[in-house]
Image 1 (cartoon, helix red, strand yellow):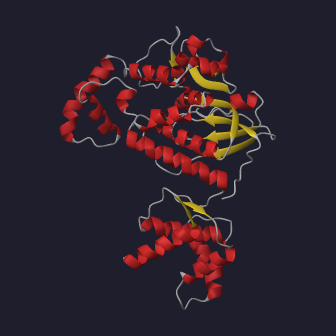
Image 2 (cartoon, rainbow, N blue to C red; image 1 turned 30 degrees about the vertical axis):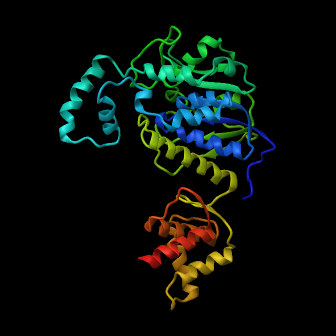
Image 3 (cartoon, one colour; image 1 turned 180 degrees about the horizontal axis):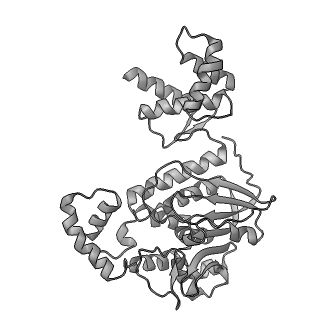
Length: 361
């Protein structure tokens, strides 16, 4: 595969907030490292701030270790069967029998004015080495909201005293469901309330080549004019990454893999929406494949002038060449046949798997 991103440049990386979906960003990081992509600045909001701290420390091994076995109890202080019950709620698995047990637990959370995140505080102190962060050659910025001062903040973490760094990381990730507690003498809220994808702080500090890692979800994205000389490479997903509080080891491992593959899609120009497809076919070969899938007696002129445009509209393929239409049609078939999509395949390999699955039906 040919790398499409210039790895002779040095990039700044913006990490979006997204709670339990954050393992996705670690997968992206793995792919960037494999491709030899260099970075000298990171900005993060919420979980992006926590992952950003590990990127600034260049501690990928620690990041993978932190996410691959994560559980809800690593973030929120839960007792007895509370973790199992809350997990059911987050995954929509609650039935009538569960409701009677859940009501008193919910009332207890309300009485305590939110979820106790003492485990998250301990986790932040465990994974973040304040000295390494402060002395890193990577500039590090986080977004948060000071409830005490009633304003959004873009904080350069490297400039903070070491004993304030972990508090500021936690401040950026302080979800509204968490029990409100002072951090460094002030109250804070999740940075997603002011800038869920912190590009602004990177642009304001002069960075021209930026990789933005998006996580689907809610939050306010700060609007500003991006200068013409700033180049932003976007890495995002079409996959379901779960809920913002659904901290689950299996889901996190899957999200890391999705992030890795989505980054590979961008880095190497892979095709596909659901699948990760390396192109080996020419446009002519793709057209012949589309013709082969038509009725044997089909009029070729009618097929090319009417039927293929109709198929393109149905598959939401606008513009591009016959290859892109062929890939969209092939993906539709592969998905219908339940062919596994969590790896990179050439177009010919995916076509072969589709043909085998159809022959086996």
